Length: 386
Ligand code: IPM
Ligand code: MN
Image (cartoon, rainbow, N blue to C red):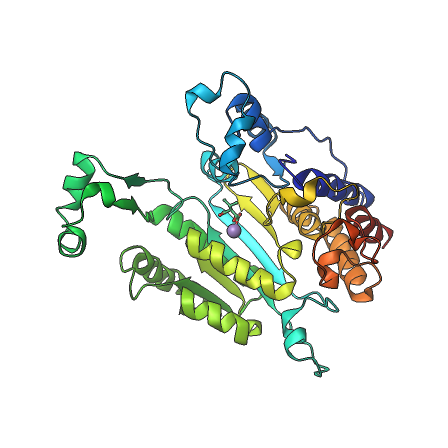
């Protein structure tokens, strides 16, 4: 599923790398994204859902998540009248297949000029390593879609039965009210916590950090914390740390090397994973897996970057996409090939001869190639060569 924008340039590069590593597969292409919304009024066509039902594994590029208002004019004739609203098909895909476990590893690449700790300690020989895996609950919380603006009687009356609502908001006219709910179920909360602990145990991480806000958000975060404490009892060697999302964002800039596995609800997991990605080189390096019991979809966490999509030569960094493909290999039991690819990436980064514009701290403009930045294809070639 290449999707939109640069999804279409990075995905084919990942497939080239997979093939070079000896992974054999037939690929079927799935339609998804803004382009299909414009054509058909649906960014996640039924045929794509069928393909995933059949094949169970998806490799995903990127999609436009919030197009500009004017973009509505791009809709095919006949669709405009329907007053369609575009919503991100990746969120829809995660919910449709209950891909409730999102795993986002973030580790330091030695020699990466974007390595934050190295940047901060310019004269230090020692290069502390970040090696964190974020487990983000992927279907619930603030992403559940249970929201209202100007709520109707039923909703408003229900809210009015809550003493805190009456006290804090009861006098607000309802047409000045918007409500987004944060829903956590025990089942999904237990699944993400168990996935986090199991991963820590399997790969020897010393701690699982629950990154929520139970002191304020007592019901949802509070339930997750209580459940985490119970599950931790089954894992004698693994410590449970409890941090608040705000403090965690501060600590990850101070001592990120102290953390191992991080687990959080949907929104806080989204935030904390971008925070850690920033330390290791940014979204050009951030990969992810969306996993359910049946289906799994692997994707870089970056967006479709429409402004870079139409360059004559593609300049974006394909490493996040290639690392996501490695996570797919792990999932398929082809870990030997994933190791080969990861080692090749590490060597290319450490050598420093082939660097995309982001790794050279340049602004993303078409002239970066003349200035010595590698193109998307050249980066993939370098990895393939290794
Ligand atoms: C991510 C992205 C998505 C999210 C957007 C594109 C809807 O930020 O995968 O982290 O919020 O989950
Ligand atoms: Mn995000």
